[in-house]
Length: 293
Image: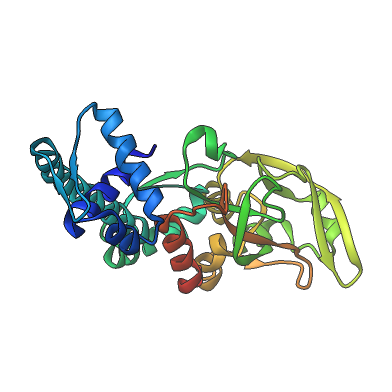
């Protein structure tokens, strides 16, 4: 017996003065209503209703129980309505993981707008270029900049970034401007530690794809560091445009080897399950798509 269901049946019997009327109101059989009340009386070890051929009325114990049932059922219904409303409205703490450079350049400026639209959501942002375990570390959503976000995650594509070869004008003036991909072998290069290609830069251009074995005089696990080293004249970098656009726009860096670039890289919002996706997660990803990051 479900006690809440039995309580609802008992309340209906009292309020409609009979089993048949309660059964009609509840879309149940009269026998089913009778069984529910009988099971409730057996569970409570007390008689709740006076039964006559003409009407049904509560005993003194039944009247007291009825009053408590009405109060408890109202509180339970209010609780369910409250939880249901929360389930539809983005709220709570949203834990986000994003790469350091992209998080600073693209995500940081957007957070105030999201919070203005969804003030019930508290943001907990961790920036790291390390590939985190979302389940183990408790993240709701992560940004992955990759060509393949992984089969174990649900991914929504936010966009992509061009990957360009750049160097500072001062470096090129001192060391010459490479005219072909193979010429990079004689230049100082600055490599990203987490790039799977390592010291072999894959470039696509008019002649198809080539992999150039470069000498990385500096490796770093952060693209901002590599960009600043390149601006200082240390060497050539191959980095995404979201890191380079300001330095390219003001001339601190210039593109080299026109027509030769790495394959563009995708930017994805990833989460762990499609089932019961929390409104805070859905609203955040929708907001990122809307803003065109």
